[in-house]
Amino acid sequence: MESDATDMANATENPEKPLRTPLGTDEDIDLRIIELLFFAYRDFTSDPDEILDGYGFGRAHHRVLHFVNRMPGLTVAELLDVLKITKQSLARVLKQLVDTGYIVQVPGPQDRRQRELYPTVRGRQLSLALATPQSRRIRRALQECGRSERAAIECFLRAMVNPDRRSQIDRLPGGRNGAGEEDE
Amino acid sequence: MESDATDMANATENPEKPLRTPLGTDEDIDLRIIELLFFAYRDFTSDPDEILDGYGFGRAHHRVLHFVNRMPGLTVAELLDVLKITKQSLARVLKQLVDTGYIVQVPGPQDRRQRELYPTVRGRQLSLALATPQSRRIRRALQECGRSERAAIECFLRAMVNPDRRSQIDRLPGGRNGAGEEDE
DNA sequence: AAAATTATGTCAATAAGGCTGACATAATTT
DNA sequence: AAATTATGTCAGCCTTATTGACATAATTTT
Image: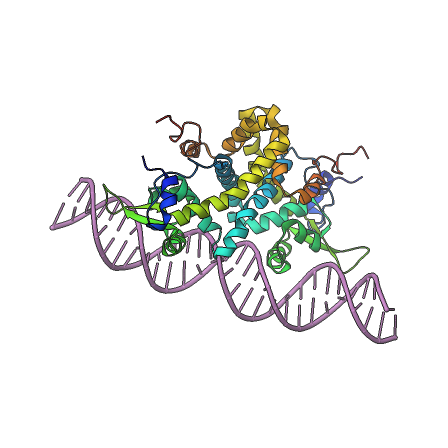
């Protein structure tokens, strides 16, 4: 009988009083999708996490390896911009990947201060091994919901990204106007 | 002219050789959605992260607070199962939330070993404040892509979750067969 | 040519958030 | 009475991130 709306009003009475009504009963908040995103992303990342364990790597290594494979030749500064982390955070992870032969650094041809980052064959293979179970999970999910819904799902996920970052994503090969599939 | 397929075959020659072809050129992997999920989730979590900073809390606090608000009265063990973390990890975060008056612990009525977790008014308000910008981001994304696509997006995200966890999510208020919106 | 800026690397300290293992307590079940 | 269960706590460790400071080399500006 006593709703949490009532409880909230009574806050001054006893602020320690436990609220027994679940959040989402009175409010107009999209908790369903908030939670789906949380669980979906957690399980989505668990696939590569298991593989990485076997190499002594973590998620940070995965992200670096992924974008170096997707944008071969990108500089350290560009990678920092994509990942939005600090160079000190990147340093350790990148060093490990270079030392173990997954990534090579090549001095920039114009500006020799820059280090262009490329995957080695080893790095390409690991990147592929990490992406494969994730892609499989996505394929199954699309099958379950109808492959025709792909565009809607892409649109939604893209629209969830901060607007100023969207073009960056679209430029990756396979993105909407990305360089990569021209006929030479 | 020289593709990475060629390079890969030449691996024995020079394993350090940088691959200049982006991943996704030859492979049948859904890199587009993999990357969209990464960027979407990152920006999605950045909204509450900023608010949390002001309270001296982190993402761990957010998750605990969220599920206590969504499932008031859940026990510590149930919360651990939802979050899939260890009790030692939970302990510190939960203690802080209890000590600062966002969550209260109530001994279980049947089994007094259990601690039922409830939000206080303070905890409810913070939870709402954290969910609001996330919900706003989702609403905008749905508007951009057509609100009619909501079902497809929900279906996809749900299908990305490990099958054995899906029913758990559906049971939350607002889920597909969840208790919460009956007519009393 | 000298000075300023830029790209990168590195050292040191700090913090959040997770982990494992071990042990304690109280309450319940066997 | 003994075993199990739910929770809490201590201690130590790991990964990933942070900030600040400083070093080096290469480029750009003056």
